[in-house]
Image 1 (spheres, rainbow, N blue to C red):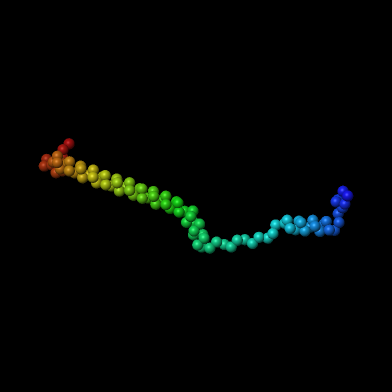
Image 2 (tube, rainbow, N blue to C red):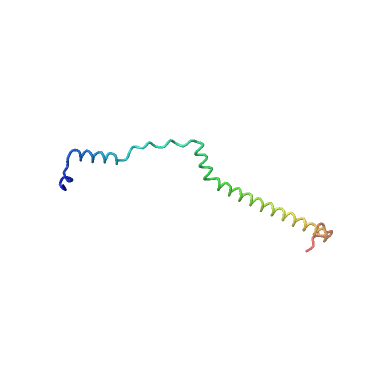
Length: 97
């Protein structure tokens, strides 16, 4: 009986060829190219967080610059008031040294 399993016959070769043919990779069609909408959506999903962070940084910088300008203007106003109070804004005999 063991020798029957080792015999090579046409049916065994045909079965082997059929199994190899079934196991071989099938041709695959490439996927359709993405539409413009899909590309735009994927770009937006990728760059959305970056755009948000950039906007937050710009708004933060603008707030900091506005605060600096406000503090400088307030400081200049206080200095001007102090100078006028001391009479140093336009002294009659020249600036105080």
